Length: 264
Image (cartoon, rainbow, N blue to C red):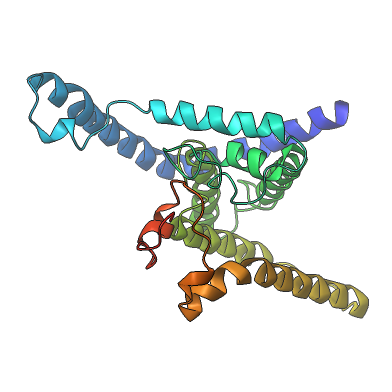
């Protein structure tokens, strides 16, 4: 417990060190928040009240509630209860019919129900450890002598990841192709920025070989796991695509060139 408390205290110390460097960035975010709050009040509160008689676009386009999130999270919780260790399988939330959506709009809940609680715990641990190492490398003290561009980049990348993580708790950030690409771009920038000033260690042939073998195995597994589903679509052989289940598939399944196939 003492070790965990010390780690948390050091984490908080590094995070607090951003206050001076992050002030302009946080001020800009506060202004954006204020504008967004006013826009929400206008579009979702005031306009619907002024248009109580109906017939306006506000009743057909704008949503004043998100009760569907509660339903989706409850649906995922039943999966977690039934499969707490290994989950129902990656991307398998969409396989179980719910007549509403193909994902729970919550990254943590989706990981828990599809991958299981132990895997979710490991993912959270590594994410927390990565952010801790980032703050240990880039804080007010270590960035004091750095160029202003590097100071800004370190702060923006950190808050981008943190904000995206919180946003993923209420939306489908981890399942949409565009947000997945942006996530890879941001994480790639962080890794490159983190490694650019690292002093290279003496070459270790065995360690390098193990890393390359591991990367190769991961690549083979990924290709092998998606090839049975991907190959029929590449070849245009729609007879091989399964159509025997009813499910609200992801938006990309519906609009990605195979919308004529029943069940997708």
